[in-house]
Length: 274
Image (cartoon, rainbow, N blue to C red; front, side, top):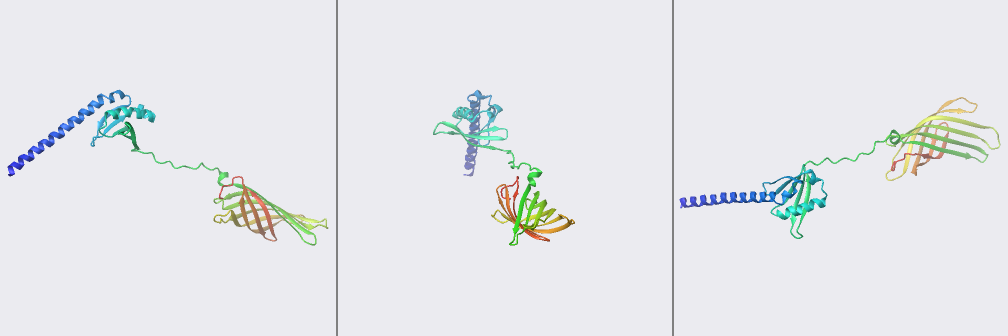
């Protein structure tokens, strides 16, 4: 009994090896027939052909194939896959691959997928390099104040500030020129004071609001008419409403004298959301 089973096993092994050999021979014969037949007409587009371990046909394409439009590639693959419908076809284009198959419903070749074995890294979109002016936008402020009481005492001021923003537009640095006038409408005499100063304000951001409260300080040299020059430090406080190419400003200057001023700041390089 054991001897008989051994004989059966040997016969089955011989049959299995033989069938694999015959299948391999038949597969190679079919491949050679394909290469000498349909593929031979497209030697300009394909450099080599072979079967992989899964018996899928792999074609090595040339630059001529790579330069074809999709319609041209499809026309060629229609003819090749009509002759080779036994498996999917993978076309090699250097590191790129194309997977083709045969659509039995419409009798045409179809490109199933494409991929690259060495994809290029995704380029991060870089913002254009900002100029120094764009990084620190400059501004020009014009503001003033006027007051008159029942005794016709009048006072007023004109204030000009120019400078630039820094710290991501959260802080400014500016020089200022202020002309202050005080007197009485019925009295021809009036005092005029010119102040030149350097100051800075910090702008506080409010979520989802175009309003920016601000605090700052200024050191100025005051030159009163007929008087002596004096240093006049001041505290600055106010609020800015960013609208248009700049902002409307309401501010309070607190020093040797206090004054409320209203004006507009022009910012040519103003960015949205500043």
